[in-house]
Amino acid sequence: MKDTRTHAVAKWPKKSDDWFERTKLALGKISATKREWFMVLDTVPAPRHKTLVTDPRFLNKYAMHDYRLMRLERILDEAVKEH
Image 1 (tube, helix red, strand yellow):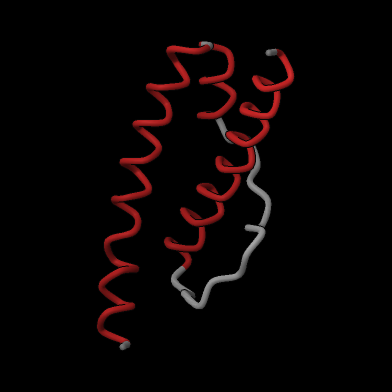
Image 2 (image 1 turned 30 degrees about the vertical axis):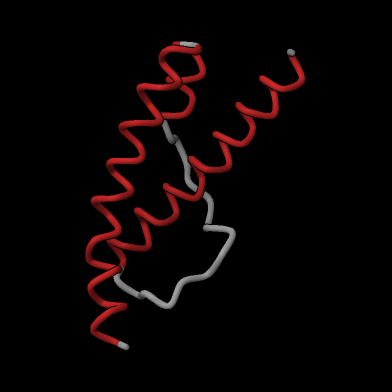
């Protein structure tokens, strides 16, 4: 079990980067302003959900990913309200 979990954790940063790139491109088609807001993280709060991983590099990326998910949710909520 541990080997599977370790392997998944090792692969996750790349998957997260790929998701970020795809999402960034998609948002650029909708709004340059929203794309920029999604991309630039001045401060990053603690993630909403805890993880068992303790590696600081992973935790930082995990927190940024979670914050971007929160921002994406806000962008989508605003888009729904506009239509």
